[in-house]
Image (cartoon, rainbow, N blue to C red; front, side, top):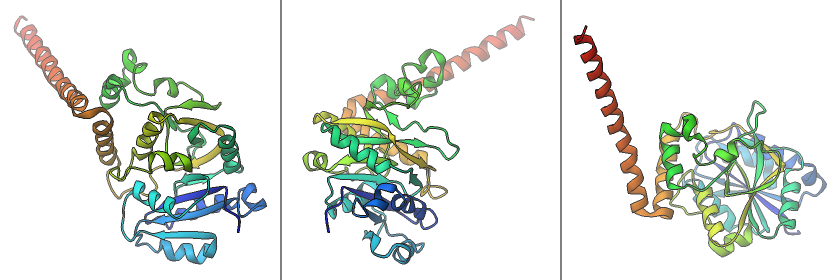
Length: 298
């Protein structure tokens, strides 16, 4: 059997009710129907207890390779386990609550073939209602991290200075080089991982793809947004009702900041974030005192 062009990796954690949509979308691609060896599908199962593995074996048999991790190792570790047992030149990460539109893999691999310095590439992602998701981002600056972590980034005077402001105003219609792309539908060149290493498993969930893009950029690799490759993503499929998404994101964001910016950078950020509450308290106290003086003067 010839080596596949792309290994499609889907991480599963109790996703029996959703994962068929993702896998069926891969097998329905015209490029896969024309050449079944074009893509190999690997499900990295994080100890699912809902019958996911049994369901996959019954529905897909030998068309899907299952990596049994035995426990919930997190997204980064599950991806790494799957990468270790595959060998295609390109890897495509697909969330279990996402589905590919026709031509998605052919367009992505063609782009990577034509752009040898591109190590990571993200698809155009649609929400379930048909709107385009914000799937690209910028690496954090200190001021941008403060604005994103506080309500100040939503205020008109500061909105243009928040991280990703330019990308939010952009229509996502054309391919462009970006700092990072989200992992819901993400292609990675295997030689990139051979050079800089796989996902950092300290990131249990969230920010693992940001960390990879940051390391890739430091090594001279490019990350691109490729709108010709399209996917639909529900969002928070495995997370819904099982844990606090925001708490997990904050934990991973903190780990990322400490790893790439250091304790002093992070400490200064935390100090200022706490300090804004002191400012709010002072403004509130001044407002109350002013109101009391006005009431007494009547």
